[in-house]
Amino acid sequence: MVTEPNNWGRFGPDDQRGTLNLLTPSVVLDALRSAVSGEVLSLAMPIRGATSSPAPGTVPHLPGRPLPQHFMSVDGGDYAAGARPIGAGLRVADDALIVTHHGTTTHMDALCHMWSGDELYNGHPAARVRSYGATRCGIEHVGGVVARGVLYDVPRRLGLDHLPAGHRIPAELLEEIAVPRAGDVAVIRTGWPLVWERSREEYWSGQPGLSAEAGRWLAAHDVAAVASDNAAIGGLDARGLAEEPIEDDLHLLLLHRHGVHLIEMLWLEELAAAGRTEFVFVAAPLRIEGGTGSPLTPLAIL
Ligand SMILES: N[C@@H](CC(=O)c1ccccc1NC=O)C(=O)O
Image 1: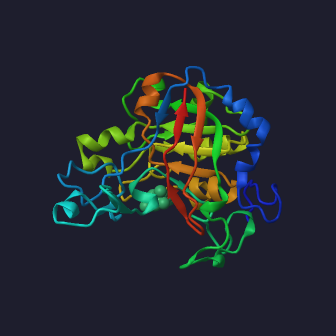
Image 2 (image 1 turned 90 degrees about the horizontal axis):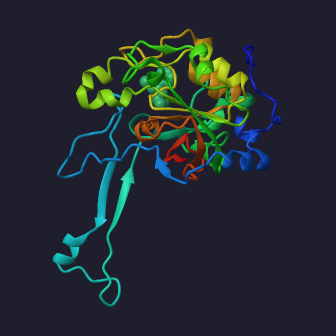
Image 3 (image 1 turned 90 degrees about the vertical axis):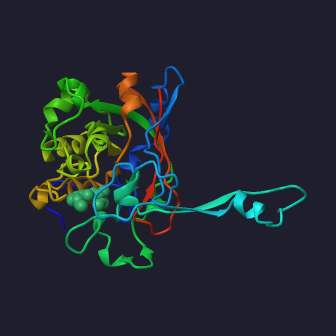
């Protein structure tokens, strides 16, 4: 059992979708009214295979995580070497991608991604997360997310390009920008991905992120999901570790205790430049049965 405030049992004893349950048809219809211009922006980082040639360099990722592997399975070289076309004059290019979800690309965390003790969100037994897949709280339970997005552009609010590594965003600052409604997706910009091109060492020297107090504030406002351009929603120290005491860890607070799905490693620069705080947020993870997460291309409809 968890003793901190939580959503266990709130959406039913068998629930595996957490606060995504707040996205009822009427909430979704209301969210769609947040689109004004119809412009569509991708909030995803590019996936650049480690085998890319010519290799233009990597995109932001956590140290020690295997980079995406992108392979061509059939390409023009095969036909140049005499491969048989697949029909009269028909030639095909095909490829394959191997990607670990949580450290190298824009992704969504399933509710089985992190826990402490023996239970996942809602008391599901952690022993159901096995090498063959998670038979509770896997990413396939998400379906699609269509919600009102609220951009918390914290560096802009503070007059900075990006937050420093040690910055822990207070709830008060979020409140100054906007108070979320139930079912909103809170999108937190730290600007930290901008550091990558300047220096990998600096990018890995720690990461700015939400304070535990801000996480509690978002959970208390019943957000449907929390998304950020950092890698852990909360901050990371120079060793890439969360520094909070366990009750303040953002993954445990939001994902484990409140069933709030997390979306990490977003690319928010175009959205920030558009200057809009409210928009329609759309995202759908791959239907990976038993998956701990999924690569994701979230969209903002302005
Ligand atoms: N998306 C990251 C999150 C992360 O890095 C993290 C989350 C909570 C506490 C510590 C973390 N750092 C681990 O390397 C991951 O799943 O590894």
